[in-house]
Amino acid sequence: QRIQERHPSQVGSERMDPRIAKTHAAVMSAATELLVEGGPQALTMDGVVQRSGVAKSTVYRHWATRDALLADVFVDCAPELKMPDESLSGTEALRQLVRQLAAGLADPQWRRLIPALALLREQNPSLNELQHEISTQQSDLGTRLLQRCVDDGALDPSVLEDVEVSLVMLAGPLLLAGMFNTVEISEDLADRVADQFLTAHRPLPR
Picture 1: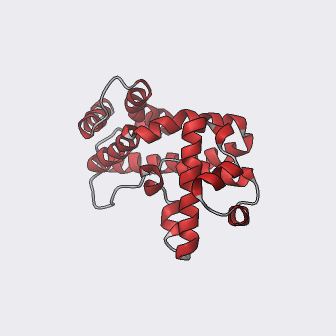
Picture 2: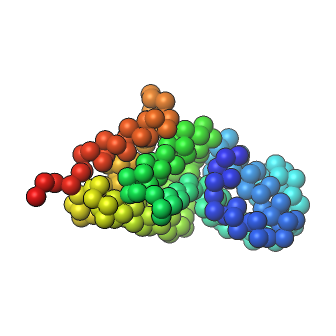
Picture 3: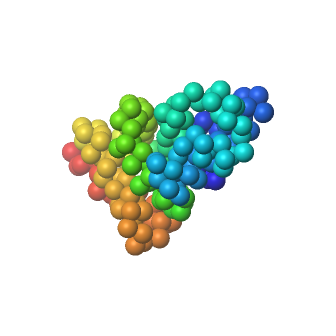
């Protein structure tokens, strides 16, 4: 259940009443399993009730509709990238972020979730706004990290001209490895990807 353990919603659940937190965790775990095993069509309220062991009345008290549950599952399953500690240099912070991405892509459960989440979003346009919010948060984090590297003199300021393209160039090799499973995704690979990005975008001589 590494996906649930990484997600920020678990931090919030720690502040819940323990009984509510336990219910939330059981429902999210059951919903994620159903999504992985059978795709969006398998993720039903009755299925979640049966798999989780949580009473139907309790499930509906927290999620009034299937769409509400789908939205919560979508957010709960979204990968989380955390900003590395501010005490680190921009270069080391970049390496740490790429290692986080590699760790997520190396998780077999997460790999199985990727197509299911894509189908879930395609079949439920209401999730597009949530996806946009998550993408915006990740883009903001990437922008701040690239700025740290520029400020440290590790990257050329040109990487900030089109941040989305820069982030695609940074994450692309790992995403490709995760999609086709042809190369082992490891910390060593993550460091090589980060170092190649740093070398390719080092400050231009003046």
